[in-house]
Image (tube, rainbow, N blue to C red; front, top):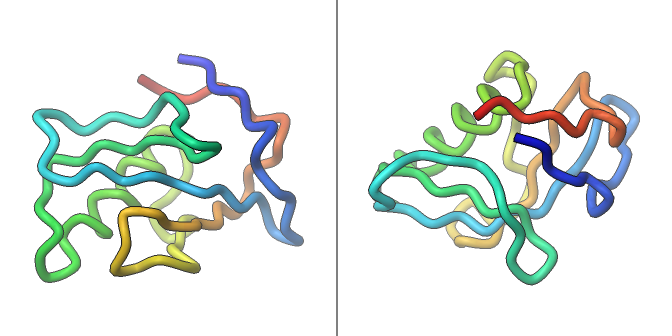
Length: 97
């Protein structure tokens, strides 16, 4: 799957992306845009940080990076989140399905 990362902002160590998280989805998937945010669907509920952990795992898997390279920098208790991914540039537009 190819996703245009034109909305990503460069950071010294990688990129920063705004996400729209949909918890309790039937399946986990990364892709599509809604209001300028990358949509991430996760099966986990938004309880006890389970959805945040699922988002980090889904993003790491999609971008082919380690989970420790992904961190939530804003919106930990919101469906709208900002994340930073280390080791990825705006030119990195291929996501794993």
